[in-house]
Length: 108
Image (cartoon, rainbow, N blue to C red; front, side, top):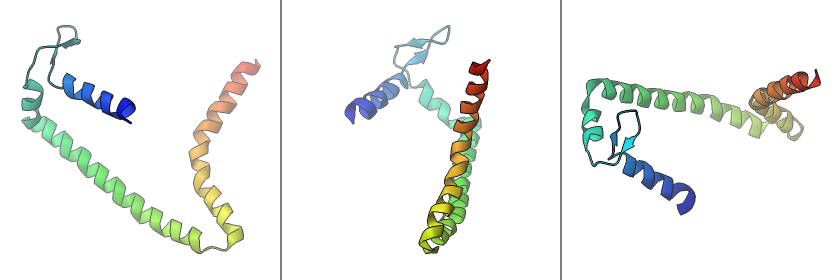
């Protein structure tokens, strides 16, 4: 857990105190400039819009997900698998389309 989560988090934290170099690289000079720019109205507006979209998306998913889960849980046993597959199929479409596209490309 420390290897996969802690070390990258520590690196991001360390880079947050560094400054940007001339060509976009990282200059390891200590600065608080990255944190002072948070108070800029542009960044605050973007932050609140992102937070609002996250809350709205969560509410929409809960409003749609709980009734659907309730219906699947209360359905007869033989229909539960079918209903669950109807929920899962949209997650597979991207994978299936890419697979068929590669089959078509590699066939010729």
